[in-house]
Length: 461
Image 1: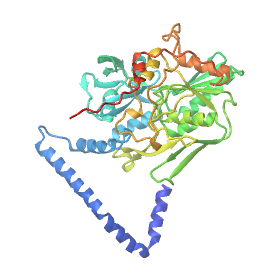
Image 2 (image 1 turned 45 degrees about the vertical axis):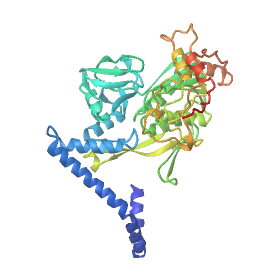
Image 3 (image 1 turned 30 degrees about the vertical axis):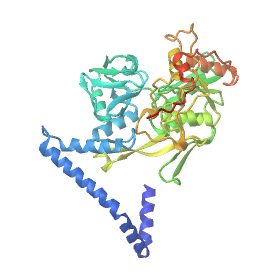
Image 4 (image 1 turned 45 degrees about the horizontal axis):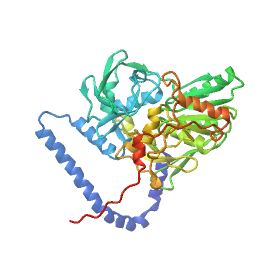
C-alpha cells in the first residue's frame, strides 16, 4: 500500500512544469488506447448479439465472469479470475481446511489436469495421480469448463459420494468413486526411520512451518542421537510463498532463500533466513519428483544452492512464477489471481519450465526409469502451451540415460526405493561418496533415438 501512496505523491509534486511532456505522451499513446476502446466496443457488440440470438437465454454475469477468466488464463496457466465463492474457497484452502476430495488441479486447453493429490485425502487413497485428466464429475462432462467451475462440482458436503472419470496415459478412461471429506490435511508429519528423521511436507498452507518445526523438535526429543533428516517434498503442489520461506529458514542459519523479480528489473524482493538451524546442523537430504512444484521448488532450490542439502529423486515440475491474489472491491467481486513475478534461487536460477534437477537421479520404478530414457510423456510446467518461457534459452532436460531404478529383487509395492537411496546418501555422507547402482539396460526405443541421422539426398523435381 505504501508503494502506491508514494507514487501518488510523486505524481502530484511534478506540478505544471511537466504538463507539456505529459501532453506529448498522451498524444503518443492515443492510438493504442483507441484500439483498446474499439476492442471493448467489440466485446459489447458480441455480448449483445449472444443475449439476443443464442438458442437459449443466457446469464450475463456468468458470461462476463467467463470472459474475464478467459482473458487471464490466456496469459499463462496460473492466472485466472476467482468469483466471490471461489475466492472464499481459496481462502479456506490456504487456511488448511475445506470440504472436498483433496486434489490440486489446473487446466490445459479446456481439460482439467491433476497436479497432485494431497496426502491422506480421498483422492490420494483412491490412487489419483499427477498428470491424470478429469473428464467428468458424476457423469457430467467438465471438458471446456474453467478450473473454478470444475472444482465447484468436486467440492460439497462431507459424506456425499462423487464419481470422477479419469483419463490416464496408456490406459482406457475409468471411473473412480470417492466420498467427500472435510479436507484438513496436516501439511507436515514426521517419523523416525532408524537413525534418521523423516519429515513429510505435503503442501504449504498457513500452518506448515509451525507444524514442521514442532515435528522436528519432537523427532530430536525422541532420538537425541538422530544422525540426519530426510525432507520429502515429492508430489507437493506448492502453496504460500511465506511458508516456503519459513520451511527453508528452519534449515538455514542466515543468508538468502529466494528472490522474486517482476516486470521492472529494478523491482527485486529478497527473502533471507534468520539465524538458527532447528536441526542443529544435521545432514539433510531432500526428496523431489515431477510433482514437486512451486513453493516446494523454492525450498529444494534454496537448500541445494546453499549447499545445505543434497537432492534425490527426479527433476521437479518447473513452476517458477509467483501469483498475487488481488481482491476486487475487498473481495465482494471476487479476486484476480495474477502472475506478477518470477522467483529465483539463491544462485540466481530461474527454473521456470526447466525444473530443479536432483543431485542423484533415482526413479521410483523400473518403468519410470525407462520412460526417462525414451522421452515418454512426463507432465510438467513445460507441458502447458502458454506457460511463461524459461529465461536465457534454457530447456527442460530431455531423453537421457535411465535413472537409477529398483533392482529386480526390490518390492516396490511395500518399499520406497527413492527413500532407501536418500538413506544411503545420509549413511555415506554425500551423493559423491554413495556407491552408484547399475542402471537399467536401455530398451530399443532409446537405442533407436541414438542412431545417427541420415542426411536427405537431393531429389530431382
